[in-house]
Length: 343
Image (cartoon, rainbow, N blue to C red; front, top):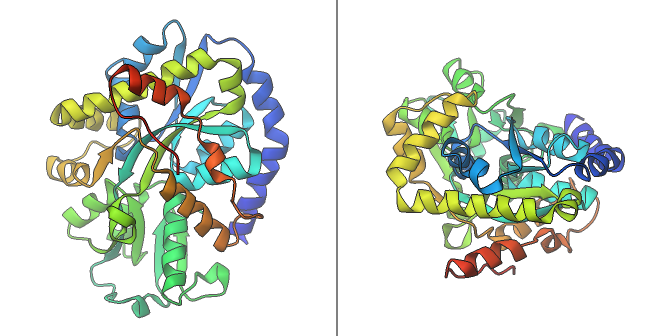
């Protein structure tokens, strides 16, 4: 029932929130409201804030940072017109586009960095051991929620809200997983970094399924940069500057990864998360690749999986229409870099 209500709520916002978003987006271009999560998978956004890249590249537009803990929160804000763009995972991206048609992916951000971990002592060594267990993820309809449910179906298992035997526990925030593992209230979780590295480093969990093993070439999108298409139409130059800033942040990570890792860690603490111990930070960082390539084929697969779960009302045959990469490719050409293709 909770899963169904979440889907209905998003559809309702798509119907009623877009008018508000349009009215607000067509106003002054002096401000761009940008969503970022205190997650290491949003490191280019964290670098853009900490190093002043957003403020410098978007000037004279002021960038107002809004912090979210989940894709569903950021989706609600985007549809309601409370923000103009956000760093966000592929699961919410798919639903935003298919329910409203009012969002666009303007750049990739991060690939990799997610896994299904199980609590030590929970007695889970094979899929059949999951019956009757409690498994957490970042929230209903979230990218990892889709991955978890799809994996369960592939092993003849279902969540209890689908009539199966595996209880899926939506987290209020990913950091909550630490306490739930410590108190043995959950038996496992499908999570993004750095929580996989954090829980395994503390000896609380082991990796049960490395998500990279489920994808061709081990590559799958974890984070994209998404903007309201209404805002984009009203203020195309501002969005182009935002894309440029994201590329600059990613290049900064590529050119000086150690410094970028330290900067992102400090910014995590400033945005309400917790700074990570050096070993946890290094372990999580090596699991991710920061790239402007949005890996469209993996988002397309996520959309198909979401549809198969019954979370979408229609077949997502038009999902590749979410990509608006002209600005990105123009910037890449100006830098002498290879452009990105959608396929």
